[in-house]
Length: 349
Image (cartoon, rainbow, N blue to C red):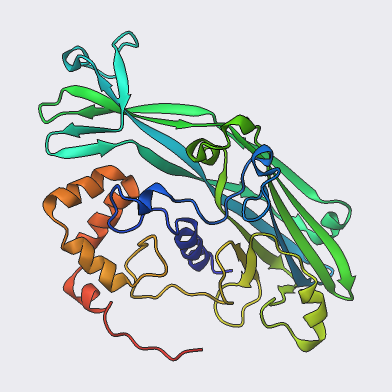
């Protein structure tokens, strides 16, 4: 299993749409988390269509007597970032400040020549299924229940003189869920593997009209990765052998689609993503890093970043930590790396 390749793919997909050009406050960056969202069940009730509290991956596996599996589920937990400003900055001389010092939350705060914004960020979560012996799984499903939060943390904001004038407050709601892995024998040396993910977070349906509040209780950008650690291999759902087309067609995938990943021809790893892919997806070796938008061209976005004004770059760096890392990486590219983004030709599959 090519774990390095898998991690690069998952990271690119996990943060697809997280932060889009111009990488600063805009309409595009106010409406995110559009892929792979599992919402609280009390919110999805009576809302048929795209909103669901459940995701299911189901695929076909060639097995032997020794077949063993491993797997994980990854998603983003949305975090609310607020900007607090002290009524009397001179009182906030140290950190942490006394709770008695009055403050208020604001949409934005100008500090020197930069503006800090209230926004939403994300915390990456991963649920490990552990090593699974297929014979053990036949005796009953493996169930893992999980929960994260609530939590709150504060980070001081200082003006050019070093005085603390405000703070970032990052707050997460409690989220709870369940992952179930099961197996069903469907033929000689063939098994159907099912991984079902459920958001089981308690949520007041009276807040359903507040999208920002709903997202704080949502499993965003949910992905499943399954690997064969010994004996066996996955069957492609996109291009199965003729004899297995009926069985693969009977696999039921809800809100996600599993594809083979790794080097072409390898069958030891499945990545199940809410974004439709072909078998053996690749990230271009010329790509210097994630631009949060797999539908865009690295060269265009890289050049746009390099032509931002100094004020725009400062805003981008302070708007979001991942945006700051993207800016630093882009500005450090050598000429040869920039030229490598232009004009590369490959044979189409």
